[in-house]
Length: 258
Image 1: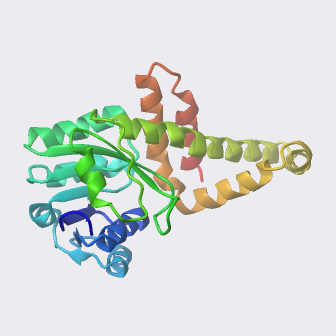
Image 2: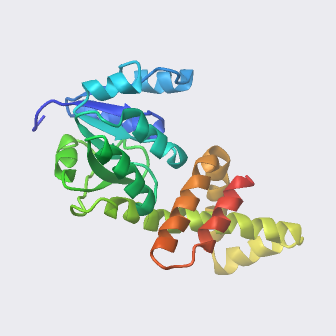
């Protein structure tokens, strides 16, 4: 381990949060989670990752140098409110828009905390070269340093909170937005009785489209519920940038129907 040993709290360890926690443990840190009112599945993930149960979010925050929020985007503001006022750094690493980041930052700053914006691109980190935690904010470098020596890359995008989330929104606007479009295209072709003909034409002229649409359907069946709010956050990002937001509001409706 290159830097100091830190106590880092992860709220709440789903697949991504548990994997990030495991990588932080690889770096020699003491990693906490809050088991109060959490599911048995979450407890199993936390135990498998070697995370230590602090009990409540408040106790986790009190004990932590850094608190990382890794949760579905619709819960990001509530998670911040649960721990506002603790003395360490709060990292919002959720798929939220820059306007939502501003609201979360206001909660943390208003309670005397210190805020860092984060945006995750890639799968739960298990090997090198797959996962980036983009960071922005005055103390982003301190958060990046906590991952030194791990497989998690931590690009810092400057001192302005919101940039990391803007990058995440722009990236997911393509990956998950186009997946929703493919789902809607196939559903439309199916309803019109031309799905087989479409797949045959794709095989000739768009050879990757069928595989991408099937991967989109599989991913949406497993975790599309998480992407409804993410598409709405992307729409808010587009609107704040003066761009049309209808693309991703429609994508939210597609995932809502899965």
